[in-house]
View 1 (tube, rainbow, N blue to C red):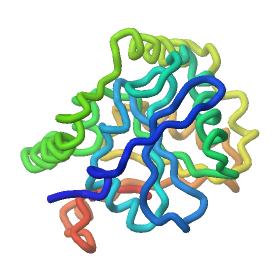
View 2 (cartoon, rainbow, N blue to C red; view 1 turned 180 degrees about the vertical axis):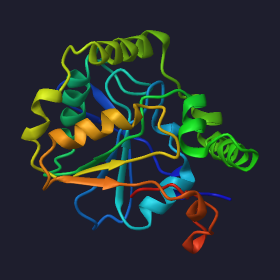
View 3 (spheres, rainbow, N blue to C red; view 1 turned 90 degrees about the vertical axis):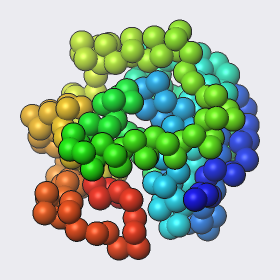
Length: 232
């Protein structure tokens, strides 16, 4: 089975901090566009095309490699604030007046399987199928994050975990809607952190997206969509 994202042309645009590689597809008239940020050690070729197919059926979707990642030039920031700045640089370079931003946890491949698919046999099979859907792109691009680059990503994670540059004290300043999704498993940060983050955010902007129940997980989804835990 082929997917829209498998054949989308990679473009490049110059920002202040880097020349960014990106792909733009889906419903062009949809606004604001949905900009997808990559995970730890991931590139834009590591988004499941089946998932992108669902998004692109309703939204304008923009994938990109942040500064220093894969095809983009520049250097990976060693703080989350720095990563956010280069993401804004990219969005500004495209001339977008606004965008909705989406990402997955800063996780490895094995963590990805656990967070989104679980440990039972069927879930693991679905997870492996998800990873196999990446092959059409990856077999050609060989896209990866260089050791030096993901080392800088890891440094940013450690800085944040240590409280350096953490945004806890400023969460109440956010005035735009925040959709906080939960995964089938919560190894990424635990329920305590999510609860305290929600408490710090203004009640008017938090949109807590609860995971489906185990009973719901077993029910077929409309139109055969492959993501029973989706929260978009």
